[in-house]
Length: 339
Image 1 (cartoon, rainbow, N blue to C red):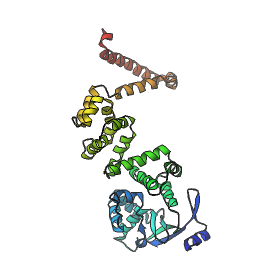
Image 2 (cartoon, rainbow, N blue to C red):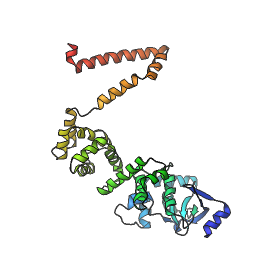
Image 3 (tube, rainbow, N blue to C red):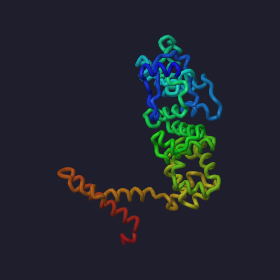
Image 4 (cartoon, rainbow, N blue to C red):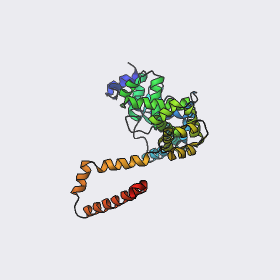
């Protein structure tokens, strides 16, 4: 039993990680002696896209540039210290949880090295199992409410899956997500790596791209479709993630527009316009059908029927207006019926 474990047992302190009671010691340590954890998903996502391990100075510099760390500096300064201690592995003194807080302390120490020289820490045993470390990070940042972005969450799951050979079923149980969700997050992260797009702000584009069953059919039928779409996302021709979600499936639903788009005869805008003209955009129909289904629900009819007084008058007014509008639109869509 090492010193950390002995002290923890004596104090009776433990941290529950995936059902395992891990002994811990709460203490203070000189922040200059602490080390950033290079496998932390946030660090990994911003600095290890080229596969090279960053230096401690690189990590500190990059974290201090981030807006959330700048805000954290002000919060810590206002509070006079940490609300929650950072979680550190004994002996190596790697900050497993709290790298942004360490960067904030380093930033504060530049102006007042005495006041911000020591940090409150929670020391874990030096020989803690690697799987428990990643389970702990998952508890904080995926099941918990801390501030990892979806790209960072996916990077965490990717690392667990690939580097530590943990299958998606086990990850799902470990993290508390569905197996399908875990596999999707890993697939999107892998897709971005495979297509050389490390831009974390583009995560939602590829998330939507891999979600759509309509797009999936086009990917299977059109050679080089993935490369084409990635190129248009990178160039800004596909300007928003919502365009991937709402407009690209419309193109994929119209065979002529899809073919022209795939062979580069049409750009994104032209392909979408042709697809809409061909009747591929079913958005208006879907909205109309959804409203009809809502109005036909027994609970909605009962709620409208129970309305009294001024509210009942307003409902009658809206229904009369709606009936008139339906008749007018129907006549425009079906001139023969009007005649």
